[in-house]
Each structure stands twice: as C-alpha cells, then as structure tokens.
Length: 94
Image: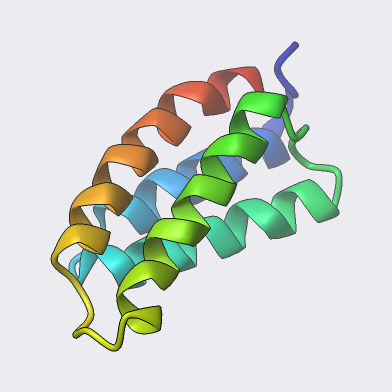
C-alpha cells in the first residue's frame, strides 16, 4: 500500500526531479538514491521489497566502474538510467 500525504508526494517528486536534473546520470542517481534513503529513514515512504532490491542493484551499478578503476559513466550510467526508471514506477507503491 502506498504511503499517502504531502510529505510522501514531495519525496516522490524530489526523486523525479533528481533523476531529471541536468548533469551526469551517475551523479543524479546518487542524489536520487540518497533522497529515497532519507525518506525511508524518516518514515515518509515505505521500503518495499522491490525497491530494496532495485536500490541494491543501483548501488552495485554505481560502484562497478570505480571498483574496476574506470572512468565514471559508460555502463554505470546506462544501468543507472534503467534502474531509476524502474524505481520511479515502483515508488507508487512505497
């Protein structure tokens, strides 16, 4: 069941704004994920099992390039965009 109220709506909008912001997809993904974690921690949104899995996948994708010693972007940016779209759809249930 989705969390209702103005704070939940604002958290969902903040996520969408972070994803759509100008800048690098990886940086935007980090900002968006941090905002969601804050909303979950504050009890504004409920963490669903699907969101939890997607956020773990996103973290792994964001860490992949830096662990391999590669430049920021490339596969991580593509994966981040894909996962962020899925998170955006799932937020309706959070």
